[in-house]
Amino acid sequence: MKLLRVTCCLFMLLLSLVAFAFVAVHPAAAQGLNPPPPPGAACQTTGQGTICQGSFTASHVNTDIGVSCGSFQVLESATSTLRFTFFYNQAGNVTKAVFHVTLVGTLSNSVTGKSVPFEEDVTVTATLATPGDLSTETDTFTGQPYTVTLPGSGLILHDVGRVVFAPDGTITFEGGPHQLLHNQVQQLCAALS
Image 1 (cartoon, rainbow, N blue to C red):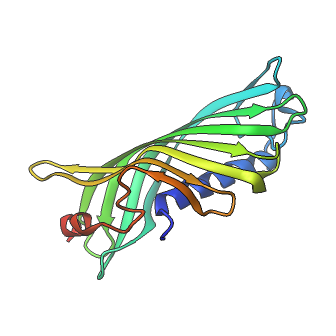
Image 2: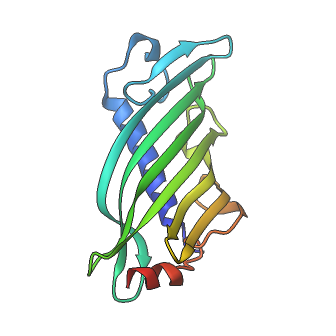
């Protein structure tokens, strides 16, 4: 089964956040947390541990999402907003991280540049079986990774529901239509041709 390309992009975004957090300067409240929260996080100590929250906005242009329409690739350009919450136990090890990602942008033909609008609204919950050990992370994606609706044509791509990935990247649960996950993109390719 082909791994959902948006999932890979989001996973890489999450890994990038964690890697960047390791080299960033953190406020005093974030000292001693494993791994450190992303830059700009506001942390609060509770009776159960520490909770860190924050958000940021980013843009990307012409990112290959791994979808081939034969003579062209599908590229994505979008502006995204990511809100995050990291939960740490009393020992300072992360036990769970929740990321809410919204994107608005276009999917385009890599050869002609023809494009269609898309929206994304996904919540990613990363749960660690062993607190602080990212190799034990199970990721649950819930929401709509891709929705493409065209005036006069209606809904041409609807990828929505829930997918759970084990630490090794295999899918352990899938619910809902996932057209990109199963490479069912004929209507999208036709709209971009």
